[in-house]
Length: 157
Image (cartoon, rainbow, N blue to C red; front, side, top):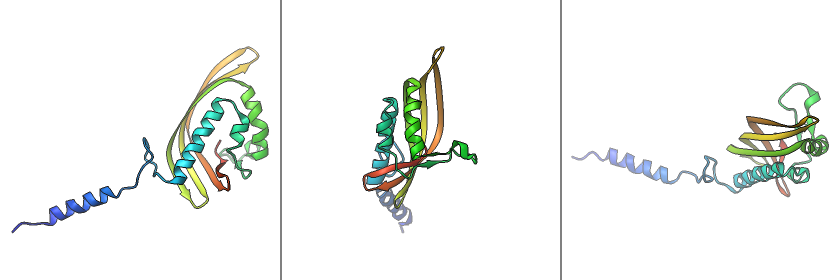
């Protein structure tokens, strides 16, 4: 008598594999309207930074923005108003910037979301002695809040 259990197990595995969630192409991120929008907001941010366009960056930021820079020191905390003042000054110090961002994970819970990203930035800073090349790469956690106009940054810039 033929044992049909291995065949049945294989059919179940094939059926489950066919039901795996869609992923955003080139990532392991679940493809939903929210995750697609968050990835698009991150890319729009990247382009705004490369253009040194403070207004375009601020258009992506929620008035609820608050970032403690991952430290207990309140001296390096940044809220929306401080970010709005600091960005143009920071961009004025840059002769050029290239920023690559790889989105590794997006988690959405109701009107809040978190994105884990890897960034690699190369920039030239204007100093009194001339331009100085700098590079920075790290993993960053970006947090978002869903508002009437869409997903906005609330920390992590």
